[in-house]
Amino acid sequence: MIRHSCRALRFVRSFHDYNSDILKFVASNTLISDSAVYKGKLYELTVQRELYNKLRIGQLDVVGGAHDGGVDIKALWNLFPIFQCALDAGVIKEPSLPLKGTRINDTLVKPLVNQYDIKNKIAPSIEVLVQCKAYVSKISPKEIRELAGTYLSLTAKNKASLSTIPIMCSPQLPTSSSLKLLEKLNIPFLYLRINTLRHGSLNDFELTNTGQLMGYLMNPILKGYLEGSGFEEWMKFELYNNAMNHSQDKDFI
Image (cartoon, rainbow, N blue to C red):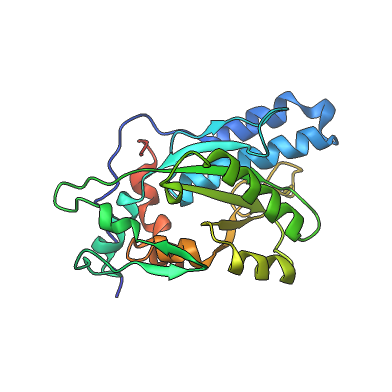
C-alpha cells in the first residue's frame, strides 16, 4: 500500500508555471508556427515542464545555440526529495549504507545514495545535460553517440564523471540498435519519451493530456548509480502525481 505523503519536497522559491510560458510563446509566434525553429522551441518548453514537474529538476538553464555542443538545457538535479518521498510513501526502505559498488561495462559504479547524509537530509546534486529531439522518426544510434560524445568532452577533466548525466528527450522510441548501444555504454544515460503538444477541439494546445512524460529508460550504469535512490519507484508508482499539490505554490531544488 502506497502512502500518499511527500513531506520531502522542500521549497525555496516561487513556483514556475511552464504552461504559462508555453501559452505566451504560442501567442507571440503565430506567424512562424509552421517553422522548424518554432516546433523545436515549443518542444523544448514542453520538456522543461516535464523535467520540472515530473522529475523535480529545478533551475533549468536553456543553453541551446550555435555553440551548444548538442546540449539544449543544463540543470542541477538533487534527488534527495525523491528519495525521501519514496520513503514516506513506503515503497523503499532506508538502506543500510554503504551499498556495494558494481562493475558494469568495465566501469566501477558506486550508488549515489552512499553520499547521502540521510539524518541531515543532505545530498549532492547531479549536473544534467539535456538534449531535445522532436523527431518524427525513431532515435538512431547516431543521435545516442553524439550526445555521449558531448558528455565525454564536457566531463573529460572531471574524474567524478558519474556526477553528470546526459538526458535525451524525444517523442519517439529508440531503435533496437540504439537500445543495444545504450546497454553497452560505459557512461550513465537517461532516455525520456515525452510526446509533443497537440491541438484540442478549439485548436488550442491541450496542455493536460498531451506533451506528457510517457516513459523512461535507464542504461545499466545509470541504474547502478541510482540504486536505492527511490527514482525507479518514483517513476513506477508516479509519485510525482502524489506530490503535485505540494509544488503548486513553491519551487524546489
